[in-house]
Length: 403
Image 1 (cartoon, rainbow, N blue to C red):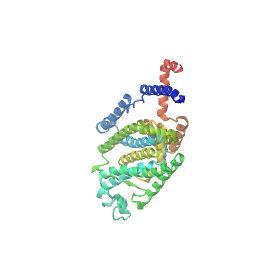
Image 2: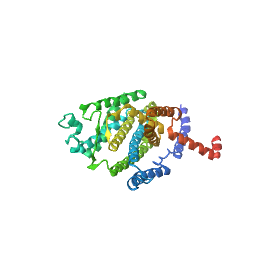
Image 3: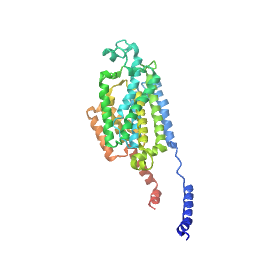
Image 4: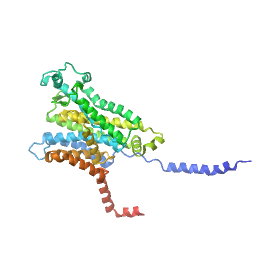
C-alpha cells in the first residue's frame, strides 16, 4: 500500500516553506545604522573644535584681564576631568553594556599613570635634589642601580607601549581566571575591590621601586620640553580631549556592532547566550581588557597634568567613584558617563572648597538618590523629559498610539 501520510504532508509542507522564504526575502534583517546621527556628528565636530581651537585661543591668546580668558587653573581642571571621563566611558562598556560591575578600575588607571610617571622621573636627569641620574627617592634609599622594571623607562615609545600593555596584561590575567571560574555579580565586584586594595598596599612598600607612599612627583620635562609651560599644558589638554572623543567613537562602534549586541545579550541573559552557541567568556574577557587599556591611557594623560602619582590613586574609594560617575550620568548610553564625570567632579571641585566637611555626604547622597530615583541617570531623565514634551506637542501621536 502507498503511504498516504507522506504524500499528503508534502503538498502542504512545500508551500509553507516557500511562503516562509518569500516572507524572509520581503523582511530582511534591519540594516546597520550609522555610527552617529547627523545631530551626533554635529555635536562631535563642535566638541572637537572647542577642544582643538577655541580653548587654546582663549587660554593662550586672549589677555588675562579679559572675561573671555580661560585660566590655567580651568585648563588643568577640565583636563583632569576629561581623564576621569575616559575612565567613566570604560566603566560603561563593562557595566552598562555587559553587566559587569568593577570596583577595581582604579588600579588600571594608576598602572598607566605609573608607567608614564617612570618616564617623567627619568626625564628629570641630574636636575633633582641629589644631582643624580637616579630618581631622588632611590638616592634617599641608598639604591645604586635602577631596578629591572625601570629598564625601558627612558624611552618614550616604550612608555607608550607599557601604558597600554601593563594594564591590559593585568586585566587579561585577572579576567581569564575570574570569568573562567564563572565569578559574577557581587562576588566579582568584591574581588576586584580586593585586587585594587592589594595593589595599593604593594605600591606603598619602598622596596618595590615605585616611590612608596610619596610616589612620583617634581616632574620637569616630557620629550625634553618643560612640563610647566602654558603651551605644554594646553598640548596635554588638547591630547586628552581628542583621546576622549576618539574613545567615544571606538566605544560607539563596539556597542553598535555584532560584538556589542552579544555583550548586551550577555548582560540581559547570559545563560541563553550560552545555549545559542556563544561563549560569554571570550566576549567578557575582550571588553574587560579593552576597558582596562582605556583606563591606562587616561592615567598616563592624567599624571603630567596633575604633576603627581602615588598609591592613593589605587584606593577602593577612587574605583567606587568611577562607578558613581557612570551611574549618575546614565549607564548604557556612552555620553551619560562622560556627563556624569563632569557633573560629579565639577561639584567636587566646588564643594571641597566651599564645604569640605560635607563633600563625602554629598557624594553618598548623590549615589543613593540616583540609584533610587534616577536608575537611567541624568541622560535618561533628559530623554524622558524630551519624550514627554514631544508627546504634548504632537497630540495626534497619542491618538495613533491609542489606536
